[in-house]
Amino acid sequence: MYQKIIEYAEALDKISRERRRDFHRYPETAWLEMRTSAVIAKVLTELGYEVLTGKDVCLESSRLGVPSSEELKEHAERALLQGAPAEYLTEEMRAGFTGVIGILRCGEGPVTALRFDIDALGLTEDENVNHRPFAEGFASRNPGMMHGCGHDGHAAIGLGVAEVLMKIKDGLHGTVKLIFQPGEEGAKGACAIVAHGHLDDVDYFAGTHIAPTGGPDDGDVTPGTWGSLATSKYDVYFEGQAAHAGGFPENGHSAIVAAANAVLNLTAIPRHSGGITRVNVGMIQGGTGRNVIPDSAMIQIEVRGETTEINEYMDEQARRICQASADMLGCTCRMVSQGSSESQHSDEDFLYDIGNMVREHLPRLKVSSCENAQNWGSEDISLMMNRVQAHGGKATYMRSMTDMASAQHTTAFDFDEKVLVDAIETFSVIVYDLMKK
Figure 1 (cartoon, helix red, strand yellow):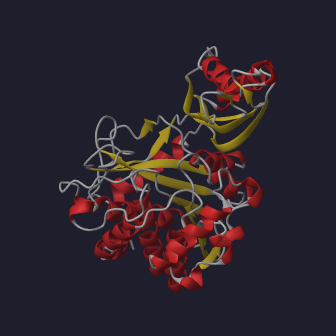
Figure 2 (cartoon, one colour):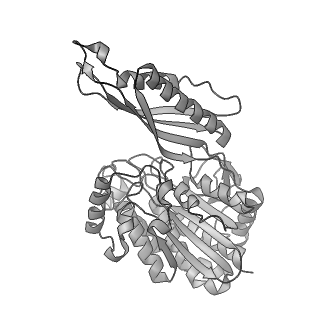
Figure 3 (cartoon, helix red, strand yellow):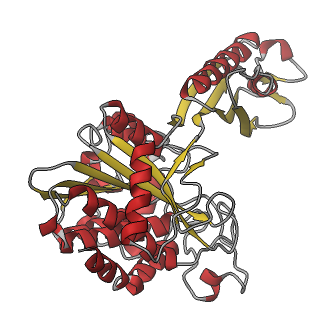
């Protein structure tokens, strides 16, 4: 069966590259992944999966950072013009309930879940002739949106895995959940899937991220990672009182001064002795003119911590500072959560088992010498992993290595598409090995 998995996966090389390029051509950011979700739902349905979309995927009250109704409507119209299959672009999907879950039920046995994130970044893609997507005609056609992190590849990998697993379903025992997650960038989407309960019965959970070869990632597959920073992200709105800056300044309460006071004091949060902390103010807006005391201002902030507990400390300090800054200037303060994640670790026994599976059944692929590499940044896959681990399940977050033209989150990002088949084989072998008995 392992040889058949390899053959099935290798036969998907061309279509997987085509799918990746199609997703790359039409990138969509958090909660706008309408065309992407509709295409995925269509493929899974035609393969024979039980398919969940819309409010069956994400709990409405737990979605973070949802765009305005006007932006949702505008993007839904664009998704249709760009080839979204209309019968799968449901009303709920048009309202920002993106993401898809494909379920394959194969009788009694363990529940295995795989996660593939599908959203793009808010970047404008490079139009240099040396940039392959531009030169070969699959660069982004959506201004200000770009697959600059590899999630287009993740979506293509997930569909490839779906095809392989359907071909070997008679050899599987249990249930497979393929989770195509919206809104990973900014840590917006996973919490709504977790809150819906989709991870509550999962025994084994795995995800991967395309990554550049180098450092501890000296193979084709790194079976586990640890150390993603927990994070909290907010848009903070300050409201004051407008007044003539020259005639009656005593009647005004400057929202900009309140926001500026918050900015300075956020950067002064005492660091935590228990581990790494981060704080950043990435945007500040406000005011209408030089002679008007401004009555509104907004800042976008984030804090991070090496552990969930350290991030909670940073979060509490940030909320206290923002509120106090408003109070000092006679203003009000409203903080709107735009994303969150927890710290993360892979189960060592599980990741080492995966390393052995790859070595034994996929000898073409090399397992990295460091099988459990340290992550930086933040990743809301942590919420899924922690929910599975909380009830005794096993979870790992892998890396799939490949050559890259530029660093992730840059406008010239691109990767060697050979990694698509590599990852399809890896995921398919993991599922089969866990569910063959």
